[in-house]
Length: 80
Image 1 (spheres, rainbow, N blue to C red):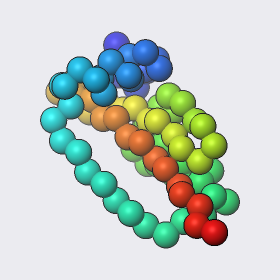
Image 2 (cartoon, helix red, strand yellow; image 1 turned 90 degrees about the vertical axis):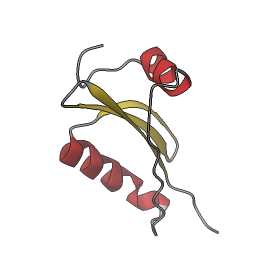
Image 3 (cartoon, one colour; image 1 turned 45 degrees about the vertical axis):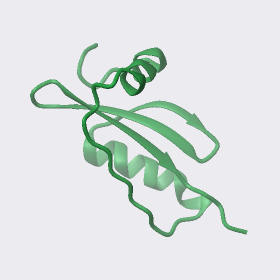
Image 4 (cartoon, rainbow, N blue to C red; image 1 turned 90 degrees about the horizontal axis):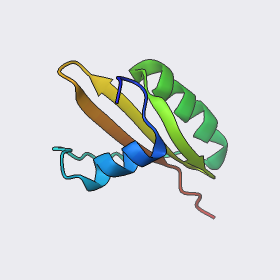
């Protein structure tokens, strides 16, 4: 797998493979209308690749120095 490129199958294997060593969660205020802007800002700022988008959820992939991988799940939950 080359840096910055990740197929859906490769992403799934990374998540299931037990090689990811850290997890972090952030909760903030956003609406479904903000989703596209948030996604674009994350991709641009952190040089991430969008692996999959479903509604207001996106799977993102990136690589950092040392050939470590970054897998990110972005979710915007709508509150009615």
